[in-house]
Image (tube, rainbow, N blue to C red; front, side, top):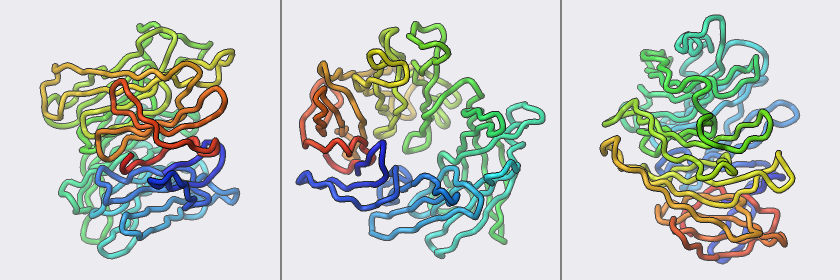
Length: 372
């Protein structure tokens, strides 16, 4: 699945190098969960009339479009193939309220599961008189396939102060006989405001949380008040080493920082992009390399070593985007040379890339990859 940074539309690239547009208005595509059978989410920016929507496409060809209530915005969607689809809606007005909605594929029904205010997150963070707006990051059923009891992972922001990344929380929601849910545990704060930056993403088994951070004691080139992320940390959420945060990667030189892309490939591998300021610019990134970080397998000792491999692009070539493939062994890489020619490559995670296709300049994003 491919797209563009400047225009809407999602395209399917086949093995013969043909790109066919499948959706006209959508601008992103992402897997719903670790199970590819759960399908993927297609999102589009709000329309001038204020409509907020996304689509859930399953691999069997069935699709479902979700449209938020009038004057409300969708803030994150998650779920799985059997427990269904979950999403959060918040009012566009300055009203301290958020709603948790659920689509049950077994009954083909949408139901409001929970309604709460943002003060519960501020109270959990020890902030008085504040309200934090949640964005749904992931959903973890207590019993696989059963939506009656789930853990929600949410990132929060202070919409009044226009401040993102004000805390990551986990809370348990249980649904009673009348299909109304209640918070029975939490919110438990996993990350504090100021301790992380986006993007943040959970491993496919939801046992680890990877996130960006800026380490002030690590030499890093900045531009005025801009302090780009130079560190990737991993918080273990369950099992051996739970609640321990480890530094998985830190930039190698003071002239570089991390581009805002972070992806898991399996439960113990992270993919990152090395970047620097473009020549003569302080508002444009020059992505010049890829990083694969190999973590200890889940359940291993927290002290086991972390290994990283880096691939540097040739001179006069820049990285546009990358996407991990479901075969675990490959990564799709999209590059552009100084003459504007774009090429899709396969990276094996070490020091080799293998050309696949040339691509038109309009397609400069990679969303999903089944097989390279």
